[in-house]
Image (cartoon, rainbow, N blue to C red):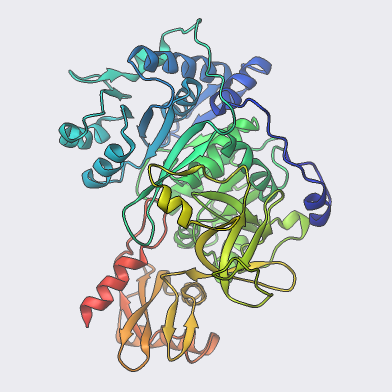
Length: 542
């Protein structure tokens, strides 16, 4: 827990990690609260028809224990990998807690994954069971013969010939079930992260990962929990952002979490959820914030009562920060991390730790620096690698079955992130770009984030991505791919106007010499732009 403090410096100075000898995520997010206050609401589900649902900690605890016992009866053992292929739902949270209680390893997977992506992850992890719905089951059925380790498929919305019904497992009382006596370093979850090179790698985390998230989470949510706090995120709970920036730490702290049906992101529906569910705290990734600006003057249309907003996943940028903070009526606290080591930098407006365009300062309990290729800390104003020093409770245990990749992630005791950043004299760190995303043009090293932020400020632009396109004279030129707001039409004149917008606001060497309008940008399941695909597209253009 983060102690209440009135200054950032005091908070950093006084904070100490208190990691217990024994810790189990499933017990901590369900049983601990059920013993104290079983009728306390822990989950609420938004239904578009207005028939919203609620689940108490008492029911959550009982159903997750029953689910754990059910998996045990099916032959799942501690250390086995159990995949969760579901949207935000009560069943997703119950499955997570049950898997942790059993001592098995949760493997969250996005329903948006295609069969090839699912097959690789399930086979690489050696998953013995998967919890899914009929939509996910259709994909699993197509590849099941290729997954020799997969023995059990649990369906949340029915039961088939070769599946087991979720309700039958979760509703059967498990009075004799005892949660695994896990220690903080025992494996709890594995989240696959797609790097810039090579196949996806499974980042394995211990049970301590939840405790490692709590101080940074409370930091950018102004000492959550406060009376009336209620959390929602549009981010998929299969992503580290949705799972560890919203769901699990909120449940651990006794804050109700709102779930919402999986769907194509709809800005008006997002505002409706915030209003109807009386959301006080939200984690909204930058891409979602940019899409939500399509709703003009939202506070005139919706009754919002937000207390805090956190945002991370990609660079937020000053333009988006200003637009979103004005639209929601509260400052957006940008923070930073990655699947392997999350919420290590953060902003906290209530403590005066806020500089629009930056990712904030090191969160309490974390040591973050800008280093060179030898592990040497670089002086302020110098571009280098964002790195996190170990040991750190939020840091991953390693990549699944990949010791070489794990070792390559470190320079001495510094875990490298693959992200370039700059620290200023005040200690704020600003994202410059992924190692592979930095553009080299006419001798200049250009980070795409600043260009994209400037593009986002143009009234016609909804989303934008900047990449380096090979050029025989300049090495690369800046090319921008732009998605327009619905009320604008692509034209050469508009492209010229957007080009001039950047040229006059940034510099002559940073403006996009080429602009191409697209209906959509390629995005990961977590909402990040897949610039690699855009670079491939630019190269193919010649």
